[in-house]
Image (cartoon, rainbow, N blue to C red; front, side, top):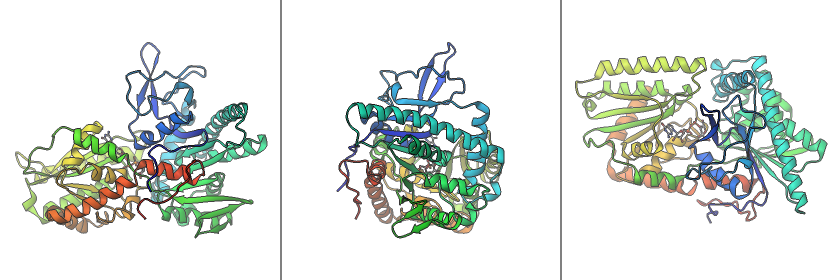
Amino acid sequence: TIMPTRPDINAPLIVVSNRLPFVLQRLKDGSLIRKNSAGGLVTAVAPVVIDCKGIWIGWSGLYDLGPDESIPEADPLDKAPTSGLKSSQVIPVNIDKEDFEDYYNGCCNGTFWPLFHSMPDRAVFNADTWKSYCKVNEEFANCTLDALRNVIKDLDAEGKTNVVPVVWIHDYQLLVAATTIRQKCEEENLRCKLGFFLHIPFPSWDIMRLFPWDDQILQGILAYDFVGFHIEDYCLNFIDCCCRRLGSRVDRNNMLVELAGRTVHVKALPIGIPFERFVQLAQNAPENLNDKNLKVILGVDRLDYTKGLVHRIKAFERLLEKHPEYCEKVTFLQISVPSRTDVLEYKALKDEMDQLVGRINGRFSKPHWSPIRYIFGCIAQEELAALYRDSAIALVTPLRDGMNLVAKEYVACQIREPGVLILSPFAGAGGMMHEALLVNPYELDAAANVLHRALCMPLDERELRMSQLRHREQQLDVNHWMNSFLSSMGALDNDDDSDPLS
Ligand code: GDG
């Protein structure tokens, strides 16, 4: 059975993430407006928060938001999934600029991002940024506690004294927020279920132990009741770290970790995409790659060193060296969305990409054809859907990636003659999308060969692979993921945790 698209949540839900599902902008006259975010997470989770009259807590995007300044309501014409979210359901966390920079650029993106992606050479260990990280996590925790106290007061007033509010915290920016929340809940006897989902990989003990305060991270995660990761490997890495660093009793078969008499449940919950939404976007998107004699190989990523962009471009260069017959027949289109531009490593990557693309285009270009089209910028989702639909190949080759949604969005948009997905085994998605062509992104020759194979693949093979890929993503979409998470926390009325594919 497939669970209903809108889960029947039996308790108020408090969602906590680094950013709110929309950011605020201040206009010249000082007034505030909402700017919507288009991510899959927001699309899936916002309707549930709206339905259960829940709350979303996060940073607003502004440093100068007054403590009593009210959040604007959505524009009445706004059709975004967050438009039904009333301002009373949104709690901005106000953070001092300096603290936020040390926390976000320093510790989150300078330390945990590279470390959790098993790239320790890029990680900076710094006691000051770690201190800011703990402080900001405490501020998020205190905001959450205020909201929780109000939610419980309302439930009690309605006589619903047996309803337990659910707190769902997201991602590596908030690894230790539950430490404070649990402590206060015990002191004040506040009832709640604490759940956490990590959107990036969880590294092995070998890597985790490099972080000087690893015990505090692990204890922070163990302050939750329920912890979700994308895939089983990350769950097992986490359990292993708890066992080795903290001496926790663990049960690897049932994915349980015990610390100080409390049992924490761990589970693999692979995230999906709003599949039908992408199908619709692809159906309605305008024609754009209309040169039928030119096959497009597509890459879409934030400009991030984990995404394997440099290796990918070198693999494409290798293809042109080995197979000059593809000149003027094939073009590689890479969309690179600017990301974390304040962090040094990202500036260096930008320069490296500019050079590499320039060198390869200089080497192979003809008067009317260039091998690489490179966009450093963001495009509208409608346009993205058209590119997914019309590209012969999606080249999704991260060096390491928690899941990777681009691979899933590409297959969702393949509503015409099917193309080929090339995927890295080092993305979470690589373990599940079996009908993709898998290739090790570090192996340039192998990557060039797999490109050649994909460009030559017969139609019937492409059709077979794509239809199976699409079927899986349609079943295991982002709504299924969210239902599974809430259901695993025991937060749903119709608790049915069955797998639609089994
Ligand atoms: C983290 C984890 C995990 C990209 N370019 C444009 C654009 N995008 C959208 C894509 C996709 C999203 O950005 C990227 O998602 P990914 O999953 O590929 O990567 P991260 O941003 O690193 O996400 C990752 C994910 O969290 C969820 O748990 O899968 O492993 O690292 O949705 O469509 N969107 C628009 N224009 C662009 O130019 N509109």
